[in-house]
Image 1 (tube, rainbow, N blue to C red):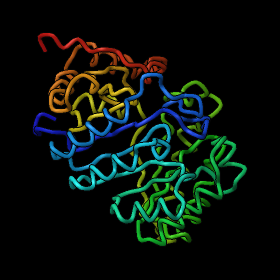
Image 2 (spheres, helix red, strand yellow; image 1 turned 90 degrees about the horizontal axis):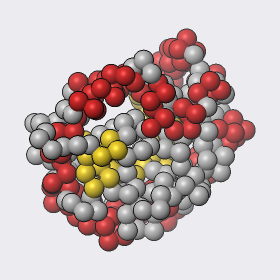
Image 3 (tube, helix red, strand yellow; image 1 turned 180 degrees about the horizontal axis):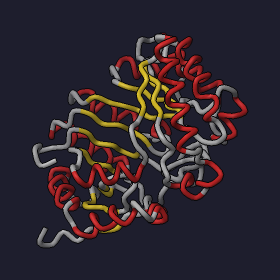
Image 4 (cartoon, rainbow, N blue to C red; image 1 turned 90 degrees about the vertical axis):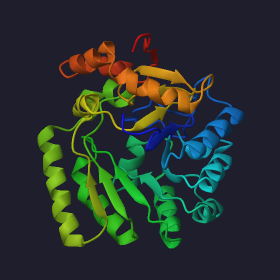
Amino acid sequence: MGDYGAPLFLAWQLTNRCTGSCLHCCEESGPDKAWPDEMSREQCLSLARQIARMGVPYVAFGGGEPMGSPHVWEIFEILARGGVEIKIETNGLLLDDAACDRLKALNVACVQISIDGATAAVHEGLRPGSGYAPAWEAIDRLVSRGLGPELVFIPTKLNVSGAVAVYEQAARRGVRTFVTGPLMRLGRAAAAWEALACSEEQWAAAAEALRQASLREKGPRLALYPWGIQAEMKTRAESPQAMVLVVPNGRVKLLNALPFAAADLKTETLAAAWPKVAAAWRRPEVQDFVRRAQSDPGLLRHANECWDVALAGA
């Protein structure tokens, strides 16, 4: 992180509102889950301009459902004019023909859509309020425009046996990349861990079956995330990435699994916040939290909170 004067990557959660109430949602999003203090349109557009001025090369939009933000297209246009590459993580429900045409015109780098089952019953059981057929239809629209969509598959006890079937469907539909990895023990997934989490053996078997399918099908590139969230925390604490996470109320967090916030983009600039993020990673309370979480996953229940990091003297 100390090698760069600006983030190489910014993850931006525009809102915590979403049409879905997914059983395994890391952010505990939903139709009534918007934060009361989410950033205003003016604050969001200001941040977009700052990102472009600082030369941040890549911004990934998540949530909640980013396409549901009333000012999302204005943000995209500012970033695209500034040469910033855009990634969108979405359930696809708002990606009609007109929206896909606009994404094509903006030359969006990556659109990820989640498909969590080989059938509508499995997918919609895990993702109440989303849609199985609409997600595939959005993928088809993106493929037809040469946008190379990515498919995200989150393994649980309820769907892990269908991982290869989903991969095979993705191959037939022209998906560019099939993204998957261990279920993250955050948000609603953490609260329902015993009911949702497949065993390490089940995940290992599914991952190997996907590797074999990727060789057999010669379909989408297979992107297997290498570790669970506790290993992710430990790895990042040892060598932080040159990135920042902006949550819906403008607080700058270190990682989605960590409750620590180093800055507030409602009251300070991204340029001022960036060195605070690097300093916060070195704070003893952050390093101690990461260490304790390795053996006490109960600490992960705090992931979606925002604790101020004491930076005085850092």
